Image (cartoon, rainbow, N blue to C red; front, side, top):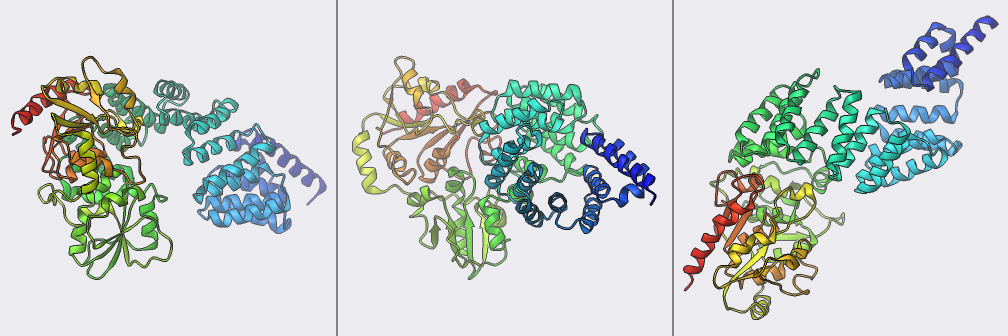
Length: 598
């Protein structure tokens, strides 16, 4: 190669690098290739060719280019970490991480390598270590928007949501026109339920990128949480006009309508979304929710099995990675680990299937939340309660708890509903009986669940809504409430009164033991949709449950009873948010029970 040709190629490489670093990948590629093959014969040119290929989503070509450059510059730490990053892009983050760490061992002052190390750790599900890597990169280059963005992702994975927003905000301040960063910031505002701010942030993105589908998906979610369902439906319709958006738009319509009593219409849209090619776990799962709520359980259970696919780090899929999943085959003689999942109420509601599995000949270990061991200790002597996995257990199979109904062919008509299947400790019940006394019509009340708006989402009612019931002759309202909502006791309308059971009520390491004992001394329990509703039902106590207009699938649609709990009666809002209608219907029902007392 002539000297002039070599100098021209080097000049082209320098110019192409400047264009690439300015974000103009297309011009950089054109400039570099204009002087090929000379520009691509140089190791720096090969490196740039790899960077361009990676930026254009061609990781295999990028790896080839970096390998060729490394062949000429063996041990070059910059090329080593670039190679590791691309290996991670190709789905081998563990190998990519090893390559990047080898590069950093040669040269520590490489902030981009530390950033890529963090990315590999995130891919490997190690957000705590990833956070340290991003912090190390930012320490070397404080104005590093990509690292600040990924740092926010790591903090989010660690449930440090306020800190995640701070990191996203810093990235956004450095690069406000980056749609991905702006969207992450808006999504975090949504997660923090700062809905008006989230909506404004999403609207700003759409001014810049009106066809950004994920932003419109987030906007539908914000509008749903603001109870602006008509606007949310209109936003879902807009997604139809985005190229490739038809299936997503159908799913979004279903998602809006599942917030309404029209579950059947919501199901139609979820069906259309799947038919149109949206085959994500969430698409199947929400279709399953609608079928469950409508009582179409045999069709629903296969869809419901998709619930863990987006959460491989949850305990149930982790156990299934160790022991194969039981799929309904003959379990005779098999040692099966059943894994607790979701909330306390779910454990209480669905543990009824554990004895049925034992009846089929299985030997059962139940991985249980430690707080529930006291309550569950009398469930069935054939069930081994396991608070933690130590690593030396010998099981043949595993199964998530809420998979048991489907694997056993459950329908609303075949739910095993023999109650009680829990009982209060007699000595404890006697102690609480002395404290509560026997006078009056004793009603235990729970009004507030977990106040997290994503979890509660309208399930809790205000304590003062019980005033009409409190006014009935002889009624004593006795609070079974724990942790949340106790401040409402100080703001009751006169002359309403609610008794409390003292600071020592249910304060031990095991949940619900005092609550169960207190319930043994009550005439009725009135509760919102919380675990206490399931406890009362499992104890066979009379219980009235106040439900929002569109309740969880576990209560089914259009029923005032529960196939799970024969002593339970359901009272639903007539319209969205209308608790007055619930207690207007419940008050005469309470009066009837009082009149029927001997």
